[in-house]
Every structure is written in C-alpha cells, then in structure tokens.
Amino acid sequence: MAKPRTAYVCTECGASASKWQGQCPECGVWNTMSEIVVEAAPPPNARGARAGYAGQGGASQVTRLADVVHDQEVREPVGIGELDRVLGGGLVQGSVVLIGGDPGIGKSTLLLQAVAALEPRLPGLYVTGEESLGQVSARAKRLGLELGDLRCLTETCVERILPQLAKEKPRLVVIDSIQTMYSDQLAAAPGSVSQVRESAARLVRMAKETGISVFLVGHVTKEGGIAGPRVLEHMVDAVLYFEGESGSRFRVLRAFKNRFGAVNELGVFAMGETGLREVPNPSAIFLSGSPEPQPGSCVMVTREGTRPLLVEAQALVDASPLANPRRVALGLEQSRLAMLLAVMHRHGGIGVYDQDVYVNVVGGIRVQETAADLPVLLAILSSFRNRPLETPTVAFGEVGLSGEIRPVPNGEERLREAATYGFKRAIVARANAPKKPIKDLEIIPVERLAQALEAAQ
Ligand code: TYD
Ligand code: MG
Image 1 (cartoon, rainbow, N blue to C red):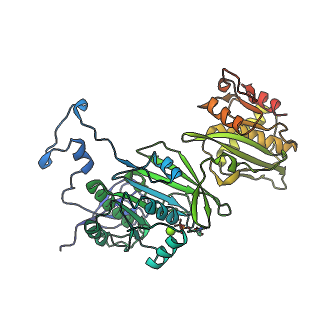
Image 2 (cartoon, rainbow, N blue to C red):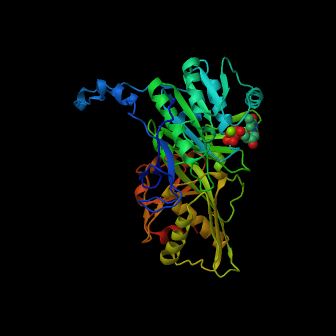
Image 3 (tube, rainbow, N blue to C red):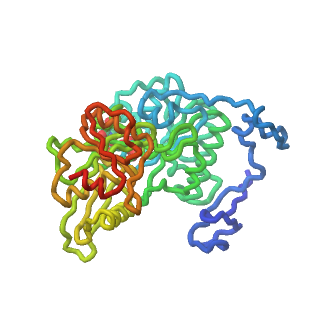
C-alpha cells in the first residue's frame, strides 16, 4: 500500500507546511507543527448524512429546517446513577465520551464497572494499551463484577483495532488510554500530539459511522488539561473530568462539555475496597463534620450542574513574616481570592495585607461558581477575628468590585437544601431572599458587603 501523504499543521494557528519546521512560518510559535494525514476526499459525515443534508454522490442540497426529520438520540442508562447523571441521563448511542483525570484517580475502575453494568444490554469491548489482560481481569475479579461475555483486547495500533471492531461487533468500546494509541500512517511517536489527534479522529469517525459508543480515557497534564491537543475536546461529544484529592476517598466526576446534557453536572463517588461506589446525597460529605463551630469556616450552597450542594469553605489568616504575604487558594481560583481580599479592604474596611491567607474547599472539590465569593470572604473574616459563625450559617452570593452582593440563580432551591441539612441562618443577596418564609431558616438579605460582614458577627 502506498504511504499516505502527510502534512504538518500548526496546532496554534492552523497554518500548514509540507515539511516539518521547528517554528510555525505563520504565527512564529515554536514546536507547534504536528503531522497529519492528508485525505484524498474526506468520507461523508455520517451524522450529517442521517440528518439529511449531505446528498448522494457528494452534491449538497438545501433543506427547509422544518422538514428535517430529527432522529431522537437513543440513550442507554448505564445503571450507575451518578455516571448517568453526568452523562445527561445515560449513554447516547454512537457518542464519544472522553474521561480525563490524574493517574490513579479511578478512570479504569469506573469504566470497567460501567462496561460490566452495560454488558447485558450493550455488548462491550475493553481495549487496553496500558495494562495486560491479566491485570484487567484481576481488577474485574477484585471488583466482583458480573462479566458475562465482556471482551478485552490489548492493542495500541488503531489500524489493528478497527478491523477487530468490524469482526467482534461490540456496541460499546473503551479505549484505555488514548495517549497509548497510534496510527501507523504517521511517523510521529505514540503519545505525540499528532498521534493522539489522529487516533482519536479515526475512532470518532468509526463511532459516527457505526453507532458504536466510545469511552476514551485521557491523561491529564500538570497544567490540568488533557494531554494532547485541545482539539480532542472539540472532536468528542462529551468531556468528563475526574477530580479528587489523593488523600480523600471521594471522587467527583464533572461534565466539562456535553452535547447531550448539562455542563458542570457533578457525579460523586467514593473509592472503596470494591471499586467506586456512588454517593447519591453528596451534600454532607463536603462539610468538615466538626461538631463545634470553628473559626475560619463558612458553609456555602453551590449549584453545580442541576443540584445544590453544601460545601464548606475554610480559611486561615495568620500574621505573615514575609514581605509579600502568601495567598493560597485550593479548590478556588487564585485570582478570585486576590480580588475578594481587595474588595474586603476597600468596601469592608478590613485589610489583611500583612497576613498570610489560605483558603481551602473541603473534600477536594473545585468550585467554579461566583456564588462562593461571599462564603469565602466570611470564612476569611471569621479566621481573621478568630471567632466562629455561632449559629449554623450558610451563605452564597457574588461579590462585585464596588462592594455589592449580587444574586445567583436558583436561590430558593439552595436555601431549601440548607434547611434540609439543619442550617438555621442564611446570608444571601436581597434578590435571593424567598417570597415565602422557609421553615426554621432565618434569612438575612444583604445588598452591600459591609452589611454582610456586620450580619456575620
Ligand atoms: P485506576 O482505575 O487504575 O486509576 P486510573 O485508571 O485513573 O489511573 O485506579 C487505581 C487506584 O484505585 C489505585 O490507587 C487503587 C485504587 N483502587 C481501590 O482503592 N479500590 C479498588 O477496588 C480498585 C480497583 C482500585
Ligand atoms: Mg488506568
């Protein structure tokens, strides 16, 4: 077979060249030229063909949008509730889902449990490029999984995997991991950007043409992105990230992108002796569980995806020996912390410029919502004054640069969740105060940061 023609494309600006160069001739960035296969004519997009816009023989045709017959996506619930929640209600047939996370977080464990749960309805094939058959089967036995006819393949070359799929005809494939896969059409080394992208592209095309669902495992780089090109995130239907602290047994699966469901949806799992167990009522695990109120702690109600979650923010403020005191934020954006401290100084009259400030979100969860602003400031204040928030208090609200407290979506739902867990007092933006009182919950509506700091005395 003739070697296919390849070209080099800049991963930054998309410029192409026929030879490899260290620096992109267009944008001037170094080490971004990566090899791709140049196809004579791209095969018709299978999804497009089904939707009815790619005509036969390559001639395209215009259709009235109202006349398009929409084929409803077919969903198969996995049977692991928290995974189904993050997927948006089950696995969509022919979809490609990328699961990223640090090594050892539990990606292989979760997917093995998922394929085993699906096996009776969606016969699966587990392709591993990282472990031996023995290791995979030993893990399956340890997990006590009902394996049925679940098949496994150790292979890293996509051109050898695709014929196996045609022969074995599974309806679900796991690729563990995409970084170990390579295409023999490219000269680049396995694990390189071009190989990861090309292998993924072939698997995505296969999924769209055959309707086989694919789970891709992706490793995460030190910077927190999935190793390999960002284009991987654009190619797949859903990107789920597995998060968690190495010391904690709790794991959070977050939908970063989902064409078939809500983004930022969270699924919570606990890692135990027999693998990952779902935690259907996760609110309680993100509280430190300390029986007495402690200084430097405030509980927030965040809403990640479609459900409210009670999460504890902890702060430690202590006199700094350094000329540039430390500001450390774990589970929260560092720049957000700096901004909050500036607002607290300017609009709350409390300066901590000679103090080290550490903020941590309990349970290894990452909070991305601005609703965390107010509780984080209250935790900082409580530590600074060395005085706990006496009554069990929750707070949520965005803090603006001019010292205003802004409302966040779904206020009432958050307040009800807090009341369910026995909180007695809530400090929230005025517009978040509910019209009807909530039983056993005192609402303190605030408009300005100064009022909030006063209320938290
Ligand atoms: P694994 O799924 O191999 O992680 P990944 O594929 O993301 O690299 O998970 C490995 C970790 O999980 C390992 O540290 C051991 C732990 N573990 C358990 O605690 N209980 C179990 O039942 C299993 C299978 C793994
Ligand atoms: Mg693994």
